[in-house]
Amino acid sequence: MRQTVEVNQKDIDIQVENNTLTLRGERKLDKETKQENFHRIERAYGIFSRSFTLPSTVDQERIKADYRDGILRISLPKREESKPKQIKVAVS
Image 1 (cartoon, one colour):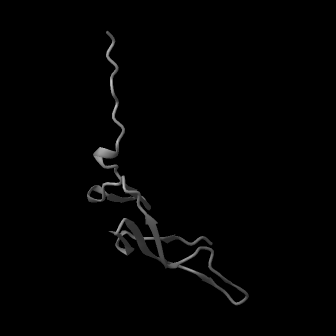
Image 2: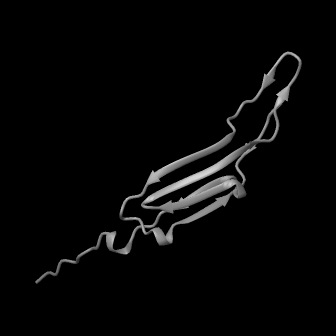
Image 3: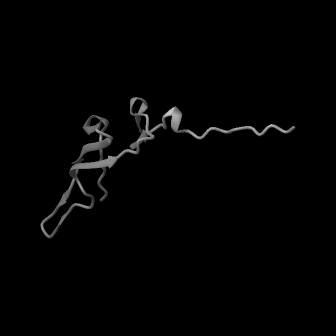
């Protein structure tokens, strides 16, 4: 018997404060197997939190999060001034 543990979009909280991105959420246990001789839970569940220090090159106003098919993607675009500029060399 197989169980599914998934984090729903409504159970995810993402915040940016003082150059720190914090991701919080909760994995809920959908089903567990209990029988007379054993009790089985195969995956972790419960509340989780992770924090990441953002580099100064990240444009915090343009951070985006997308949740699709059980995958959370967080986009951290660079500030325009931090992108490298190409300088063309003139030939004389």
